[in-house]
Length: 468
Ligand code: ATP
Ligand code: MN
Image (cartoon, rainbow, N blue to C red):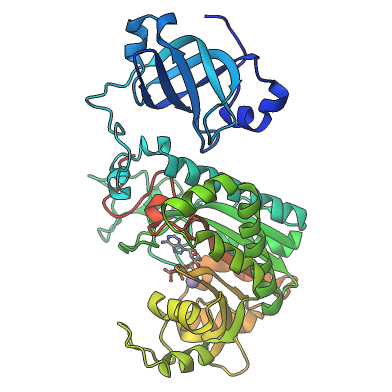
């Protein structure tokens, strides 16, 4: 076969006018379908560079039958052919095949994606192959675009990307149950005289875990570089089998010196609107596909978020609204209890009908590092609540006062001696500062309109599931 430089299907569809009808090019990809009659075969070829497949027209007379037989749904081929303007509607160009090489066959009897229209549940069981479907191609390209947009937003706004550790020596972060990291022999761990596992003999000389958040280290960065962000994997060993929780998920955590809670809310709102706008502008084909296939209101919902100011209100006001709502909730509403996703979604979807930022939560339900209000009861926390998702961002202004911080740590039983490095920031050049955490997969849920968080990460980690 003549060796030609391969062109991505995305590039062909975008630039076919300059490539020129009549030119001979090479395409490589996976066969979605093959149909035809006694004279011609039509192959839909997709290489994942774009949602669209390209039609390859094969004149049966010019190819030997044995090769053509190998070209079935799922097989991988390389095609040299001539670009021709497509007579049919839908696509501008197609490829008239001249030479075909089959890289890999896919047995029609056993290839799991033989037919179209599989359920999302079934596709989860073949997570190793689902990227080859239109749906997961679209989701994975959007995930990429959002990662890129996150870095772009922060870079353009003077933030530095700080790499916080994934293995952490503190288990006091308080955001959730942790996964232990150890190299000790699980059958015969070394024991202390008291008969407990002797972690001084473990790899790090102390117990270590996978991080639940990069925030505490992020604060150390902000106290030197002013504005930083982290963007990395975080882990929670909670047995929460919900459509919004993963055991391994990606979190985006900006931390800003000299920002108070209002600046923090302004940033969160601007950031989210930027990301949604970025998707609307740069992921149009994939969003159109998801809008048509899964959720006819998806694009309208995305536009709505970018066009309207988020509603800001106090936790206490939210409780009053929920109590006066006349709704029966599964979990009762009382001042001092954490809001459940049903409450969050009522506020967003029924009451205000737009994203909501709740502030000034009861101190008792929030983490030790949040800035204490003068009322002695509430802290300067902020949660951003989104339609269909509930909490998408959790953040706060941080307590910068050494005395208040350590008092709260003692009340909550958080050992000062383990957190000495964190406390040092309040001893040496402390400053007002704020930050928040955006759950990356919750963002992707919102952008794609998918209903289950297992469908917006390539290889989901959930209780009882780490196969792929
Ligand atoms: P939730 O109440 O929804 O369980 P949280 O309050 O425990 O969340 P935070 O510790 O505030 O979560 O984490 C910050 C953000 O990370 C959340 O706003 C959410 O977007 C995301 N997040 C938290 N836990 C998970 C999880 N298990 N899987 C995916 N995303 C998560
Ligand atoms: Mn939270």
